[in-house]
Length: 53
Image (cartoon, rainbow, N blue to C red; front, side, top):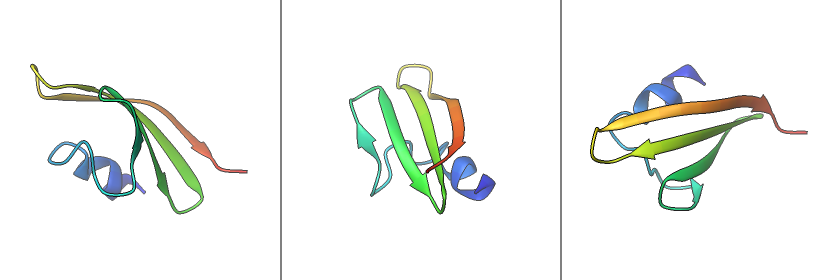
């Protein structure tokens, strides 16, 4: 799971991610990663890591 989060730095909008232009959700196995994207500063903030029920 942490590898997938690390890859968000190079590709903040990977295939399979969904959401709006600046707030996206990505399923990684049994977990969901909610992250915020700031294009001008090239920053990805992981807001929440949680299990999908």
